Length: 457
Ligand SMILES: [Zn+2]
Image (spheres, rainbow, N blue to C red):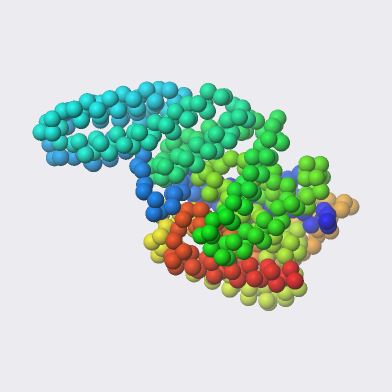
């Protein structure tokens, strides 16, 4: 195996936080102790794409407990609310309680159920809101087991044994109680998992690496789905073919680079390190992590295919500057077309659109200049080391390209990664392949796939 340490690095950091407006931020981050500090360029999405509907759209949706206002609207008969006020009050109390500890919330939902039962015992003439109350009771019966599971996990405390159950529960919540309605619960779970994992990171790195590594298996499992689109299957096969060369490492944000000295021992001869969160802290669960993993694996495959600087540039290294600019312009136009189709799509929820739009916008930013500066700094700081040459080549190339193509040049590093990530989102969300946006993404992914294949040959 080739272990070219000078080719290491450039990371695409991909990070999501819940509860904020989508935004993109980049910063510098030393990737390991063998690098001079602050020299590694890194792009990072602090994305934050709030909550996304993670269930297949054609699945029946169970509603989470409605807010008091929604419930009152659902059970509005035009008359004064008299007998129903006990239900109203207890619903309001339920919502006012925190998830941690969950015991009080469980007690409150029990009392709410009692109030509903009492209401249903009234005669129909006295109680005209029974349909709405029955619907509420159904939702309660879905919510209770999730809360009970949370209670079990909370009792474990901040231990490794709690991590997998948290991940599992988060996915259940996202599936059973779709976005928007499940926001508070899944946000709570994200915070709770973060709280546990951050505490464990120092002493349980191996176990957390193992959990992060399980996402590779989950990604591989997608191949068993007969409904996986052909191009997605080809892409995943391409990416997963590299898995034995990748040390998947738990880290508080994601990124990929060639193995450096700090990871040498654990990487055990593997050429690349891909850093991934062992858990999803953005309230988006497993589909979000698999999308992020696909994004990172694509950077690595691009590195393998084009072998164009430590910055994983997505084009043949012998292209002329004119040809690079032309390619960049073509890609920008393509991303704009995708954005337009995304805007018009009726197969995606607004929240899914917001998430994908954040990625597509990111692919059209102008980050090459920032990278060029970072690589230049790398040259200065790694003088005389084996890393100097790699930084120099990247600094020169990035500078040359960004001067010729100042606006939108991120498409030269982030195109394939964002497209493949979107493929995985669309599949894991169960978006119909007939959607125009999906069709276009598949077409673009196929072209990018073929280009990488050609470059490898
Ligand atoms: Zn990236």
